[in-house]
Image (tube, rainbow, N blue to C red; front, side):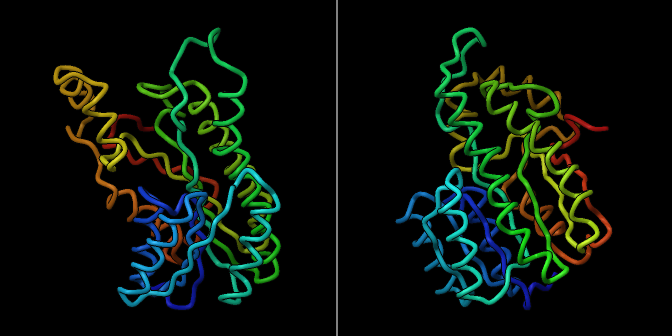
Length: 256
């Protein structure tokens, strides 16, 4: 896939999926803006991409704040002159405890919903203007297998936000399709990123891990590279007639 004439914003660009997406896009010629609240990490990742011969900028952005998001879009347009791709990757369960519904603190609910769902909304809203003007755009939202089957290791607010992202994706795809903008989502299963390895090995016994893997037809977890390939496909013109869908990348644990 060739992204030589494209510019992308990747939220949650400080690590994990975000950095993997950015590196892969940059390697394919795309100019990338990595956005995250963690300034040191996001700037470090951008420097690494530039050192490898790509074009990248790190930008500090809290996706729950409209002023930050608007500044992110402005920075991208000022630096690279266009915005073709938006990957709404910022999110996660953010360390809130997984507790019964009647014990959830309101502030923990709001925090997770804001970063995952409100952040996706604010970034999509801000990107829509430039994409409409160009009559072109690719928006990819990160959901989760938990949106399909409920949380194995994650709290209900995360499950709820990721489920809402699927509905959000479907609706916005219908609205923006006439402008040449494709909007899709990816719902990974458990992926062995550095952070999730700690959860996988720290919270599950060997027997629990074995039982979980036996439920997956492919009998293993995904690697970050396997998710990245799917995201890049949806960002590419090879997926030009795909919009409004959520691709489930989970080894067959959930399928429709």
